[in-house]
Image 1 (spheres, rainbow, N blue to C red):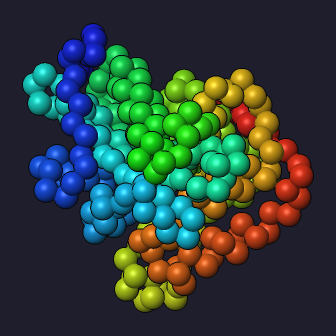
Image 2: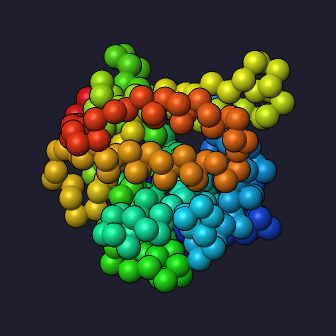
Length: 267
């Protein structure tokens, strides 16, 4: 069992361009874990995201992407994570939050002291949001919300329970899944989607950390809708419009935008 006593035991590699040798190492690690769950985009999609520039607006949004590969002093991969910053310019100018989508995070299950890894990811994602805001010419002190998608809780599934608890320890809260029926878009290759008869959304739960609002146990439904729209706008950059239709249709079924939605801190 590997044991990380302190941060100096680890080295952080931030992947920002397609020629970085850690891109393939990181992608293969994530795809090994998430690909079989249909929760991993293709490598072409990841490479396209590396070209995102938050200062270039697309339908009112700016985007930025990073992959992080954390290795120990022997060169073993301790953690791989990737995340996207999503800036809806008008929302931020109106006082709303920048969204950081925590796409995937894998932590070596043999690692002890993995809390160091989690802390790295918290710091890196928030730093990426601040840098993106400044590059876009938006207020650098704008609110920030971290958003992650997670497999629904299943009693007896130790792997899922462990991941949920890691998110809770990192300060994320679960959007009440009995109220918010969230679908992730279909990540299969377009030809596979077409051969199967069309895109199918993947039911997941949303985990949120509203930075500096971690003690609040509800979120306005309108704010939650804006977060989901931001995630879908991000996905739409590298997906066909017809493959996004199913998730937008599901979102249109959420009606009462004046309500609040519970944020849960335990399973």
